[in-house]
Length: 168
Image 1: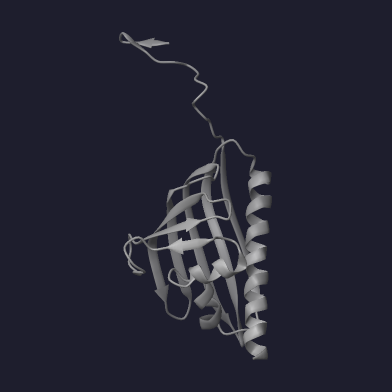
Image 2 (image 1 turned 135 degrees about the vertical axis):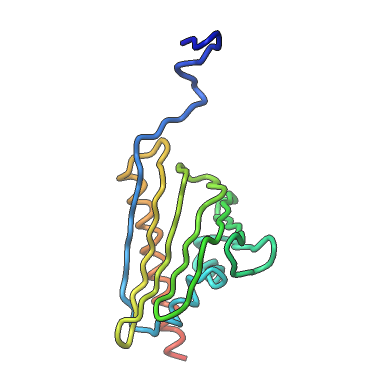
């Protein structure tokens, strides 16, 4: 294809196309106070999840600041990494953390925005993970299955840690 004398390739083996936008949410109820569950999933608390083997590290390049624009680099067990940027975190009656991926690392997606919400529920609380992303070279069903498997492992890990702390 040529436009005003410029040649524009119509296909390229290096170009990846996407026609799928993923938007998922998953939630679980916990028999623990919201503040205790929040301590696992807040911006500064998320490194606790390395104990569950989900990541090998979660580092803060400029220190563990809780402010919009703060970065967190997360390394996975296979050695690859991705970088998150805090958009907003608030802890009032409901705890909320919104973030984006500014380097998607090994993940087959772009334009990722995530949210973590912990809502008090009587003597317990509800924890929700959610995200929106444009998928690249992966079906929505395949990404959903992979993402949900990880989030359910996180729920299970938090439940185990909560029961261990209740037993001690």
